[in-house]
Image (tube, rainbow, N blue to C red; front, side, top):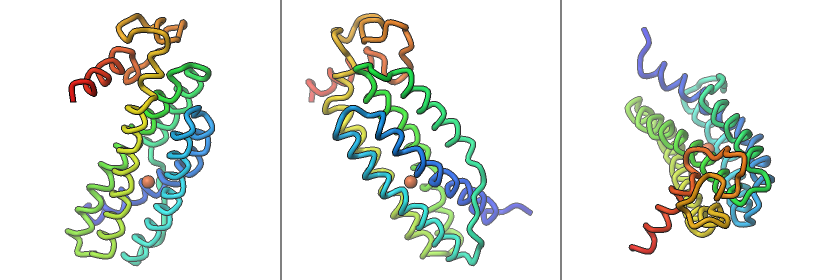
Length: 198
Ligand SMILES: [Fe+2]
């Protein structure tokens, strides 16, 4: 019978795979970033991510389980998209906004996953595991917030290029019209409007 313990184990193995993939992917994302602060933030999250791998190993051990990973298809997909977006926006003023959007999708996935894992560890009566998972969850939330701040500080504005934010896709500096959801000028413009009204 599949119970919460099975669900917990499977999700843990998924996240172990996800974190190991991120350890490989984050240096590439940092290299693609042209904003020095963004590069620094990605590299600092890389260090935390290496710590997440270790912490997850401790979570397995706290359950007397063998450490194992199982392919996290969601992370595979999100990282493929990040690669694609980095290639599409290379040399564009929207590159940093594009990278932030890709990184935030990963962070949101991790926040959802660790939120569940933390709750389940508590229900399974393993306070050591619950504590470790809470530590990871807190770092993912902080990383996500830093990305939002970086987007608001300059990357979204930079992504507007020469346009006034209400123009066509061409106006955002991408003549091939490859702009994607999340980095459209209208979104950046909305953020900007949000600030001035605060
Ligand atoms: Fe992580």
